[in-house]
Image (cartoon, rainbow, N blue to C red; front, side, top):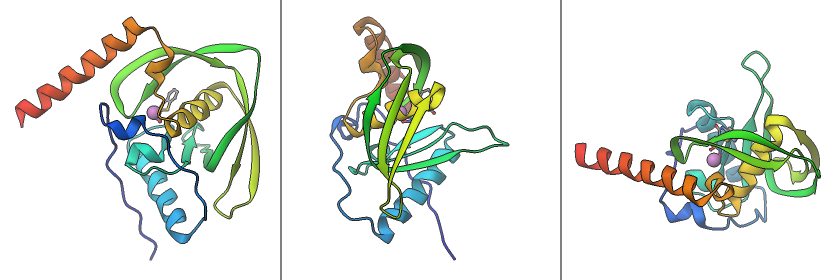
Length: 175
Ligand code: GNR
Ligand code: NI
């Protein structure tokens, strides 16, 4: 019987979130198991995307589902690379499982083209717009140690970080 595990999600200020993840050099059964566990962890959270560094794994792997409940659209990427961006930018409200309960408007290219490997090591390409475009850029950022708060003003970033640290202190004193 195949079994999947829900993995703990790493939160700020863990330095792992600021490290650059390494390319997957060989796709093994272990890689495929990790991807399964990441998918289960993303749906459990729930979130629309998850990057391996968020579960303490420094590999270039992301999973996403920006579909609806009735119409899921699971996408799993190994070694994703942005190969094209639109000139047009859009603003979307983003959140992050590693920065609990905080959101901010983030401006990004409206459309991106991404090249990646699937679980069988086959090269794939995706053109994303709308929420999926924001999500795939947010996830690839995670692989480079970048968080959505790096795209907003210092004032807003510091406000969010102060709130997160306050909650963190509260939860460690309580317990
Ligand atoms: O669940 C998530 N929602 C979200 C909303 C707008 C843009 C990006 C995202 S990704 C986020 C899950 C997460 O933290 N992925 O890294
Ligand atoms: Ni995130």
